[in-house]
Amino acid sequence: LIEWDQLFSPKDKLLLAVSGGADSVVLCELCQQGGFDFVIAHCNFRLRDEESDRDENFVRELGKKYNKEVLVKRFDTKRYSEEHKVSTQVAARELRYSWFYELLATTPDSLLPTPELLLTAHHADDNIETVLMNFFKGTGIAGLRGILPKQGKIIRPLLSFRKEELLEFARENNLQWMEDSSNI
Image (cartoon, rainbow, N blue to C red; front, side, top):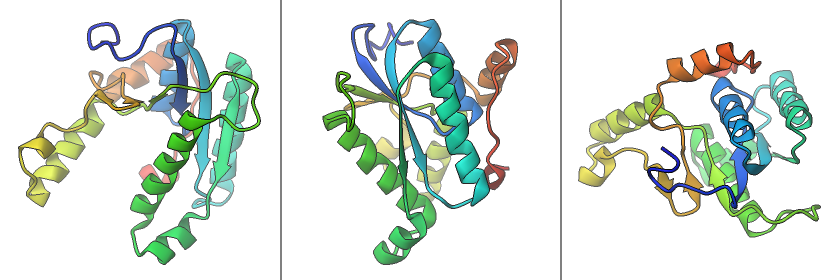
């Protein structure tokens, strides 16, 4: 898929959005196995108390495992949500992508080259959910195409894989990940 869609190349410096969940852990492992140069970015939205901090610590350890730089940003998501009169989910998305775009422009506290592309771990099941949500909201044709594999500097290399396939890969490679109690 990466070569077929010309999503990115081995010379690109990548920024991986990593929550600590199975999908993003698989993305890290695949990039590591593929020999890609990447930095890990983790958002701590501080919505799940100790669980949010647990996930942050897990991602920091993942960075050590792969010998990769880990950038972490802590957000006051609830306050942002209230101030901007948006749902917590919308607030988290706005905060997350705003920070990611900042990181693509410049990497703070680092002498390393600036990442050029953002990789997220969206997969086929996420795409199906997006298409259905768009359909029920009454979107036009553009909304029915779902999540694009490449949209500007955002790359979603796992879109052709179902969640179960990613979990199978994780188990076969003895990967550990964190479960988010709010997603269960």
